[in-house]
Length: 235
Image 1 (tube, rainbow, N blue to C red):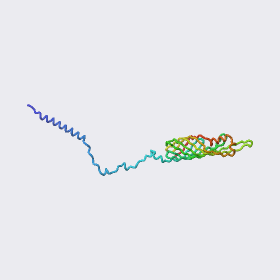
Image 2: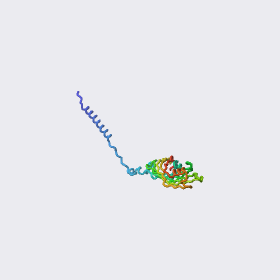
Image 3: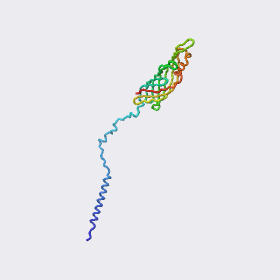
Image 4: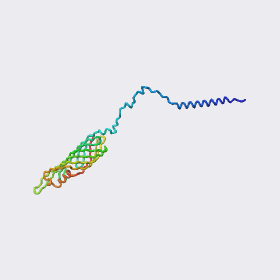
């Protein structure tokens, strides 16, 4: 007896149709576009949180250093003034102004009792706003010298000399200042006399060569200047 093949064909066709429908449904579910949610009017009207935040000033950037002042004083040891002290004002890291008082305590040089003091106005320019500076000092210096002069046949007599001079002192150097204000420096330059006058108790020509040389060397000649160490506080 011959069986009919129609039920088997129908079953296979139904299986393929179900499989195709499942594939189409899966593809549609994966590629479906996301639904857009409506924006609430009250939320859209609220201003941005970032708009209400105050501007933050970065003080560490150094943008306000141009107007910053540092005020303090430094002291140093060097030549020809062994001791010096100087009040100082630094403006914006570019320029510093000072007024220096220097002194050489009384000492004996080649048998001549000598002392020295000076007053000077000072300016330093920091061309790179760093530690290096170029400076110029304009000042007045006073030197006292005393010795005993022997003049034959009159015997011995005390000789008192005073030399007053004005000078300029161009120089270069370095100044380091920590955040706490501790300041260290070194510098070197040349002292050039502008004018000099000598007041003597005896004619200067009668003074011994040691006296003349000492006074002229300290006040009437071009001298190198060296500050081996400057230390102070700038706030």
